[in-house]
Length: 182
Image 1: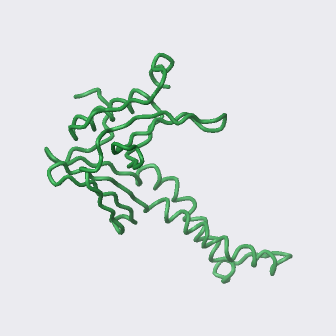
Image 2: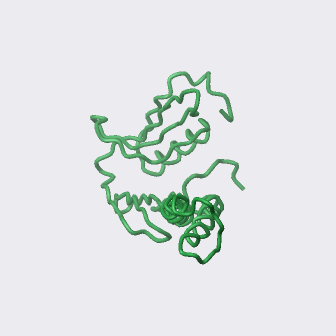
């Protein structure tokens, strides 16, 4: 068993994949979805509710029910992913609801290095370590992942650079200040 953090799934010798969505988001979206379904039924009279200011409350509830149900549905069923295939030299980024519905393909030949950089947060947001692919002019960035832990991000960037056979560019300025778990 490896103690290295893995953010990529190995799908063969020439293919790695990263998926987002599902898991805890399903649990987070379920209450929104159920409350939305419940509130949507009130204006139609399926759930009897006695209210003094009925027209005003119904005018507020009518759009809120579908809004909450829609937000819960998207949280529960939205998925995104990235597949990098070094044999065909393509990266496929996809989005969808349970299954890929929209795909965008990029040629890996246009990217020359894997980059890790620090995007500092303010008092309300944490620091984030961004992993991306760049070309020689650094004009084109292809986002791979963002992680809160420097050591996990560095390990993932090193693994990606090794997999792709590209150099790693580490733009995190002061490595001495970054402690494990920060």
